[in-house]
Structure formats: C-alpha cells, structure tokens
Image 1 (cartoon, one colour):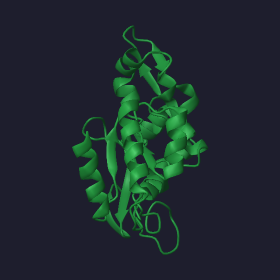
Image 2 (spheres, one colour):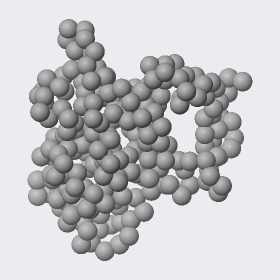
Image 3 (cartoon, one colour):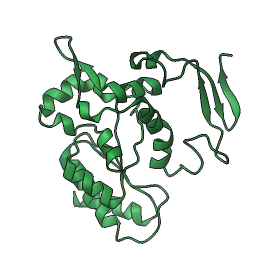
Amino acid sequence: MGELRGRILAAYRSGWSIAAHAIGDAAVDLAIEIFEQARSIPGARSVPNRIEHGGVLTDAQLARIVAVGAVVVPQPGFIPAFGADMARALGEARVPQSYRAASLLAAGLPLPGSSDRPVTTGNVLRNVQAFVERSYTDAAGASCVYGPAERLSVQQALRAYTLGSAQATGQQEHRGSLELGKLADLVLLDRNPLEVPVEDLTGIRVVETLLGGTTTHSLL
C-alpha cells in the first residue's frame, strides 16, 4: 500500500491530477487520504482529483471529499445491470450509501455522468434513465429501487452527462453547455427528454451530432 501511495503522489508532483479507482469504503478512505496528502504539494491543477466509482460512500467520507475539493464519478448503469447482486452483497443498511448521486449534488460537488463502458452500456440516454429510476430486477423478477433518496431529476441527470462531466475533467470553459465561445459539440434528439415519460428516455433517437460545429452523423 505504501508503494501505491508513493507512486500516486509522485505522479501528482509531476503535474498530473489523480483519478483513483475506488469501489469499497476502505478504498475510498485510502483515496481521500492521498488527496489530503497531495494538498501540501504546490502547483495548481485545472483538473480536479477524482474518485472513479465510489461504490460505497459514507456521509463522513463525503464531507472529507468536499473538504479536499475532489469529485466522485458514479456509474448509474451499474444499478440496472448489477443492482440485485450489489444489494445482496452490501445489505440493506449500506445500499443507501452506494453509487450516490443526489447527495453529491446536495453537498455542492460537481456530478459527472459515466458508463464505465464496456462494463455496462455507453448509451447516455439509457444511463440518464438509470440515474432517474435507480431500478433493478431482483431474482424473483420484481422491480426494486436502489437507494431511492439518491434519485435525480431528468434535468439533473442530463446536466451530469454534459456540464458535470466537463467540470470533472477541467473542461467546463470549453464544453458541457451551449454558450458563446464554447465548442459547438452537440446532439439533436427527436424528442425532448424533459417532456417524455421517464421510461421512454432510452427510446429517444439521436438524429444528428455535431463536433466543433461540423456534422459527424445525421439521419436528416
């Protein structure tokens, strides 16, 4: 563990930000400890340190993450894909601390959207729906909600996959929202995600994509 800590801090001293993969609460503790140590190393970073996954995150850990200015990157697609197994492994008491979303926003943290593709689908609208529903099917075929207090609104979920992700990668000045002076990277959809039933989000079609203002895909 000491070697791992040393390697990460050496990379930070060289000018890199830290992206630490941590799923369990013990791994999250280690990541936070390293972030706290890194604060004594001089040099500004445009990209915040972040925890990839944060599969189990306690309130105390969340407060420490806020204090060190780090970001947590959850994967909502894990819930429909692996929710039954995760709920069984973690137990009822710890599921509310797992793959949190609403709590991160409430704490004032940027919330990015992530898929961890190819572990789960890279379909953004499917993952937006997962952020909102947080549902999975159990072994008996019943639909269950995984930590209902962590559900997002559709608008919050869309923001996570746009401006939230830009903030987590230090690119918010150039990407993530439609504003004067930012890159014209955007998609055109056949329906408004804010106006369709949540269960229909995945069925929305991407009719055109633009990269830097140039069409790269079109069904028009």
